[in-house]
Image (cartoon, rainbow, N blue to C red):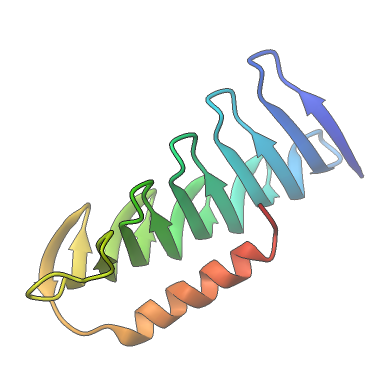
Length: 144
């Protein structure tokens, strides 16, 4: 069943609900801080594919797990610098590529294995970058 609810903190949700009253299935959540999420929910948390847009204009398009960026996706900062690759528990973690605001990748190229926001090991990872782009495209299909 789809319906809307406004929370006491000013956030709101419009979408599907479980029989136990949890956000479940497709929905749109607007958070009190102005962030918005479009995508899938499981037991109240963002899960699967979705798009998260932040008040400063930055956005994440890709996979979520238990409310956090997790899996493949693209995070684009408000200045258009972006990371395409793997995420773990809300952080850049795994293989990926950084593209700076001027559309360059740096010299030497900022591609390889990351932990947090730090490049640990440089290596080519075109397959991972493509998976991140595919996940972002699937997430965009949910709207925003």
